Length: 378
Image 1 (cartoon, rainbow, N blue to C red):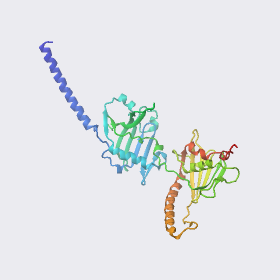
Image 2: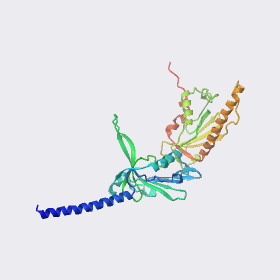
Image 3: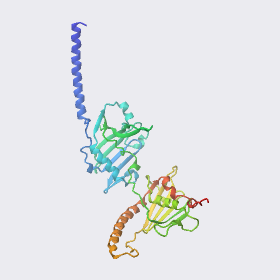
Image 4: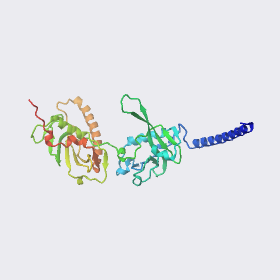
C-alpha cells in the first residue's frame, strides 16, 4: 500500500467516524426525548385520584372498569361491582412503574413479544396473533390521561431441585404510545388482564348458624335439622340415620360458597331442571338458593334470595348475673350492627345470577341415600 492510498483510507475513516458520531448523538437525542431512558417512570405524574375509567382489551376480550356513583363497576357484567382491591393494586403500582431495559425490536418481531396493537373492537379482531393488552386510563369526562400497550411478561427462572422450572414474573414488555422502542418495565402487572370475570368483587353471601337445610327439585329431596346450634344433625322426617360428617360438609359448603363469574341475561325462573335449597338460620334469616347445570359446562348457575330480619332484642341467658348484662348487651349490639350490614349487602345479590364451580356444590347436591350413615361391619 503506497502513501497516497493510505492517506485516502485515513480520510475515509475520519469522514465515516464523524458521520457515525453525528448519527450516534442524533439517536441518543431521540432516545432521550422519547422518554425511554433507564429509570424513567411513564406514569409518575399520573393523577391517580382522577382516574374514573380503566379499559383493557387484547383482541380476544375486553373489560371496562368505571367509577359510578362512588362505586367501581364492570361494564361487561352489567355494572356488577368491581374488585376495589384489584383496581387499587393496579393504580398503586402504575406511578412507580419504571423502565429497567430498552430493546430495539423490528416490527416483524413484535408478535413474539405480544406487542401487536389489538383492535379497539375485540370481536372484530378475535383471531389476532401476538396482540398485546391495551391499557387506557380516563378521567370522569372521558379524557384519556394514560395509555400503554402491555406485552409478554418477563420471567426469571429460579434454581430448583425439581424437574419443573420455577419461573418468577419480574417485568413486562411494553410500548408507549407513538414510541418505537420496546421497554421492559419493573413490574409484571399480572392483574392487568382483559377478562371481566377477573375484576369482579367476589364477596358473596355467607349462610351461617344454620338451623335446618332442605333440598328439593331435580334429583334430590331431603331435609336435615338440629334442635340446638351445636346439636347433632338429623333427618327432619326421622327416617334413617344421618351421616354427621356429610351433614357438616353440606352446611359448611353452603357457608363457604364462592362464584367464578356473573351470568348476564340468565334468570332463575328460566333454569333448566333446577334444584332449590332452603337454609333457615338461628338469626331468623332464610336463604332460598336455586341452582341448575350451566349448558355445555360442569359449572352451575346459582341465584340466591334472602328473607327475614335478625332479632332486635337479646334474650337473657339462663342464670345471667346483673354484672354481666352490660357486657352482653354491648356484645349483642355490636354483633347485630355487623349482621345488619351483611344482610343489607346479601339482599342486593338477588339481582344477579352467578356461575359456581360444580366441585363447590358437591356436598349440597347429594341424593338422600348418599347422606345415610353406612352401618359398620361387626
